[in-house]
Length: 285
Image 1 (spheres, rainbow, N blue to C red):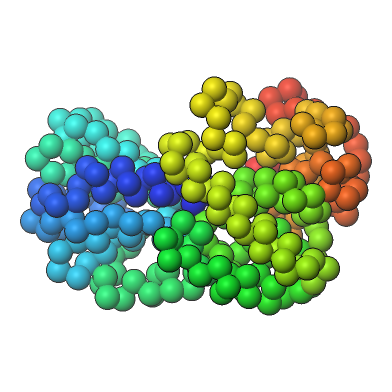
Image 2 (cartoon, rainbow, N blue to C red):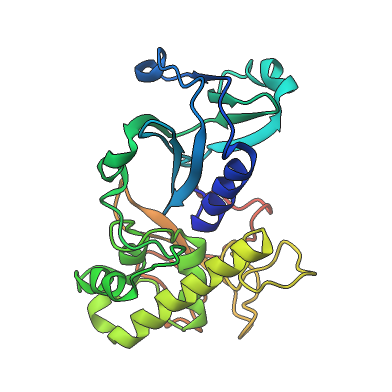
C-alpha cells in the first residue's frame, strides 16, 4: 500500500494539473457514482489526508479516493483519454481541455460534501505530513494501548496517519527498537523520537520526489536500512536482515528487522534461513 509520501506526491500531481480548471467531463466507473455528473465544476484543490486523496470541487463537493494496494492516479494529455479509458481496471476519468486524470485500480471512490469530509477521514489520527501536525495527540494515541506492539500502534491510521511498513520499519531500526515490543515497555520519549524520525523521513521523501530514507542523490534501489533487505547483511552490524509476520488477520503485516541490532528474533520468526527478495525465497504478500 502506498505510504504517506506517495499519496502526497499523487495529490500534488493532480493539483498541478487540474486546480483552477473546469472539468469538461468525468467518467466514474463504480455503480454508486455511475450517473454522477461533474462536468462544468472547477477543481478547487487536491489534498492528501494520510493515505486518502480529497479532490475538492466547486459546489461543496469532494471526490474521495484511496489507492489501497494497487491503485494509482496518473495525468496524461487529454488526447489519450479514449485509449487509456479502455483498460478494465480504470475506475475514474476526469478531463479538462488539456489534461485527463486516470484513476486505475482504486480501492475506494466516492463523493461527499466537502463540508462533510469528516465522514470519510474523520477517524484518522494526526497526519505526519500536515504542516499543523499535532505531535502531542499522535503520541497520546500511540501510547493509549500499552499491550499492543509498537508496530501495530504506528500502522493504525487512527493513531497517526501516513505511516506504512517502510516508515515504520526504518525508524524502528534507526532507534534500535524491536518491532514486536509492546508499547508499554517503551519510554514515551522513545515513542516520540520514533514518530519524529518517521515524519522527517516522510518529509524528506516528499522533497526529493521519491521514497527515500537517506535523501542521497546517487542512491540505488538499496536506499533502506532494513525494509526490503531480507537475507542481506545489516548495514550496521552485518547480520542478515530478517522478515516475520506481525499482528493478527486481517491486519497482519510483515516486518523487516535486524535481530542483532533490534533485540533478538521475532516471536513469529522460526530462525530458518531467508534468501534475498527475487532469489527464490517464497513471496510474502
